[in-house]
Length: 231
Image (cartoon, rainbow, N blue to C red):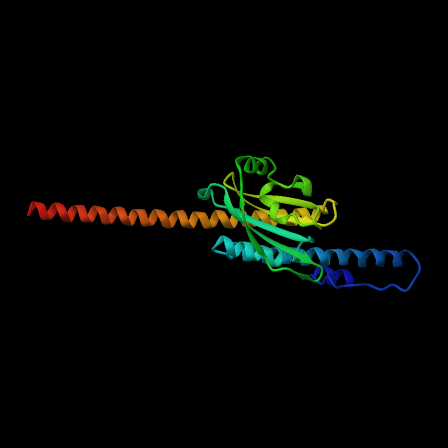
């Protein structure tokens, strides 16, 4: 009966065996497995919901707010930073920082930051993630250099082979985060990249339409002037 409920998607299923034989051990293993499956299923649901919210965002600032407000639903960290780079701004950007304290946290703060060509090249060379300590923190992340933060994991956001931002998880302890945390964070950063690509494609299409309309207007005006001169 327990396996049937599990197969139907009921991850709260638990079995009880009142014996001291191998069936008791099997029941314990089954309950442990369902507990892990429940956690993983909840995590996937949460990541899916956040990803959908990111993809539904029409402006970069909205994407950042989604990440900043919901990042702790999927990964454990003591602070999160987020920045997006506009290729037309020459490396100038804004870094959003949210510091988390136990059950409460600070509101996100914004700081100006500047990316050099070396910074962008370093992120492109490590597209998955890279780890820095307080002493090796890149200058664009200086606003995150708090006295109690010692480890920083940066997840580059790359759109069409161009570095377009970064998501940063910061920790008080100098221990590398678990593999699943890194995987979940990487997935969220990738969703931001997809949303940015979509946003930029829409803006490029709008600009092309405006230019086309302008060209049509210019042609009509030229034809009207020609007709007037000929008359």
